[in-house]
Image 1 (cartoon, rainbow, N blue to C red):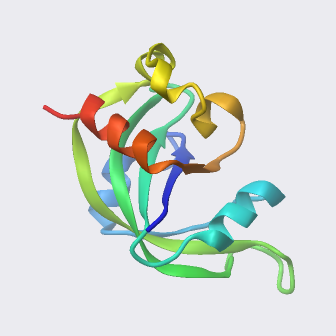
Image 2: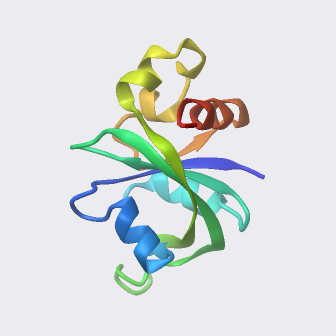
Image 3: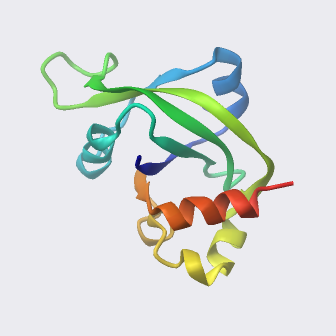
Length: 136
């Protein structure tokens, strides 16, 4: 199993939207490195769901339900892909960016090292630590 983090502006598509819809195709990624990360996702992988811009916090965990397929929002024949994600669990409390930055064991977290990248891998120990920080 691999672990990932995806970012979404809550005003555009929030955790509440995601859970209400019971899942979504993660479309609209137009960065090659982020696309490569989407292509590496496999069913069963777990994904931290991060609210960017206004909230700046990890708020939940999604499950990769289906591997990468052509992104329906992209031009036909383009290299862009999407994966299907489903909600797995909400965190008891959001883990704000400040808390992630304050934890020395997370200093290699992709979100902190490449803050503009919308899809990043997460090491298992980082994933577990974020879940600890978000536990009730």
